[in-house]
Length: 198
Image (cartoon, rainbow, N blue to C red; front, side, top):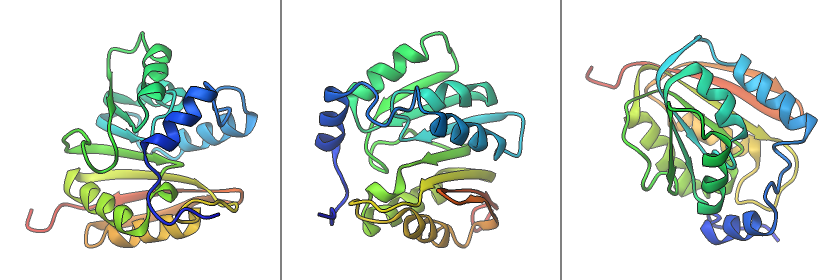
């Protein structure tokens, strides 16, 4: 049965407590290829300050850190964050936070925001709140990278619907939008302009 509202901490905590890698992020060839594509989507070699929302156990975080002077990685699950900290223990430029999005997210401005397999866990109201938060906390000329599976789910939104709602909600800061992959998953890079009045 489809979830009608945003999926909360209890759901993810139960998953991570029963399985240390419930989506096989660390072992799946599909996930590895998707992470490689996500990193290729970055248009710059380095970002002063970046944010990864929904970092899970830190598999993408560890790779993303090579492109960031400072990276804040966030997940709703304390169990996932504990595993991510272990995976990224040698990385001095990564800080981890347990928080729901957008409540409790670290302060920007961020030059890069990555949301990989996150948005469809939110209902439309919370998704629009997160988009507004990103608009307010992204630096001038920031990039946002989205990656979402397009198959059927029982989550509040499908991958394509969640991505489309999020991108539309970035107006009036939206300056560029490129869909880089649209097959099993949708990968897109979004360019933002200055905040209104800047």
